[in-house]
Length: 396
Image (tube, rainbow, N blue to C red; front, side, top):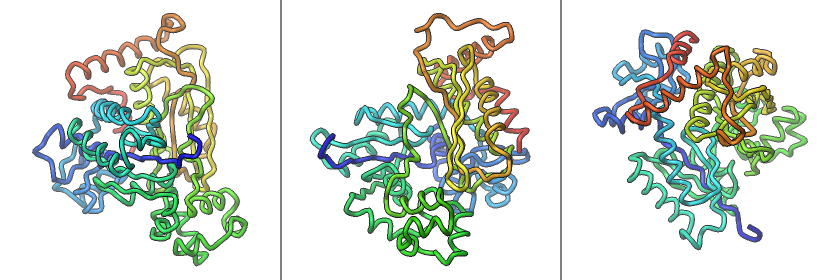
């Protein structure tokens, strides 16, 4: 909208998995809750409550270590179908405020609120109303960060957690950034912080004082471009939407860069699970699987493969994206982000009936439809696919 300052909301469902578990079982509200593998099994923490984080527990931590730090916690398995169900409800509330919603994960979304002040009032008032409606209808707390672009809005959310609401206008971006520690600059990992420290760059002011060519001479062009733009509030396009075709995707940014293939593949599996069930639930079909990778130096690569038939199951989507991962990643370069998706979406049935395959892909699709149907009827999210549970148990 020409002449109207951009206004972007970033919405984050606070400690989402653990919050849903407390919603379903109020007796564990206010207690340390750890969702992931169970003690005594191999695996990692998928998510945890803020009460558990006080003991040093965090996502991707080996479950054995989490148990040592917080043995009194409530340990629960991942119920992805239930989280997706709740997520859909929340996203439906957000869509009332703008048609320009970009869901970037099961618990995060951007809302382009540019030009909506006449409808809803000032951004802070709108954010407060949004928080109230989500709490009343979904029973969950959200944090809302408001900024002039997606990148700033994301960092404002991080600064406002938990259950917060904060706005940073274009005029206030410099002051906001100068008040952050380098570790709070979104997208800057441990390796980059270590390298900056070696160069005696330890504050945001010190980083902002360097030109992009100066940073390039120290860190390389890719890292320099990201750091210079990010430290000045320029959106580097991390959350850009691909306009080429209708698509559906999910991605995760690791708290620390990953080198081990098993943990990256495990994250990819969970993302494929999210994407496949969202496609099925929303009535989409696709022949094209997409992989996204971002490495430690912020270079980003995408790869895709188009099949001769519709993708029919989580296993098939995972198999294709896993093969793309093997082709695009040497297993040694640290991985910052991994994403999975499907592009070229079409409404199921628009181009005729799904094909029947002798190799069993159709049968797997039918299983996933049955799982989805049970979850819809029972609403408890207790049914999931044994193959996914087995995968989580085997891989760490």
